[in-house]
Image (cartoon, rainbow, N blue to C red; front, side, top):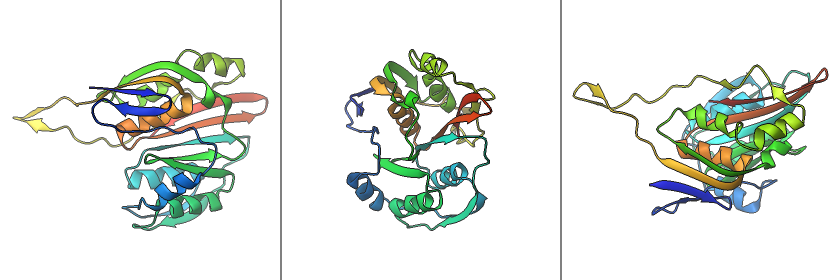
Length: 233
């Protein structure tokens, strides 16, 4: 079975799953969906930056999502924040954006984003004509390959952006493989295909396909240097 995405909608042939996100603010429909979706796990965080707090919230609740950071030379602000099991996602995300007011949140088809109010970087609007991946493969590889896609890498180069310390994948725990007669079974996956979508939509689609992936994209301008970094947790 192949999953095909066109016109910002993820279509599972024979299943009917939708996913996509291009909104520029928190819409009424997003707030309704986030209000009707509850946290199944709580967490108390002490003096964490927005990216770590958001990532921990997603991880504890096994929820896919992504965040964009546009920064300068300064050090990210750190605050303490707590979330309780049973809390609506809208309340949790409102809490985050009240503590880190430079961000707004979006929530569509179960995928949460924390995005900069000053606007998302232009690379997020670059159109990808076609992109394929298989969830049997390593999670970060599909995310990283987006930035090697036609038009994406050249766009970053044209803006004078260079990779910051290379593309970085964070370490995460994977489920142990199923063992049959003492032999681990190969990981089973699903093949996906994207057509004519933006980078932002592609990143969210990949995160959703894996179920609980968190991607983080950062652009940093400091001392005359302009860098970018994509991370996966």
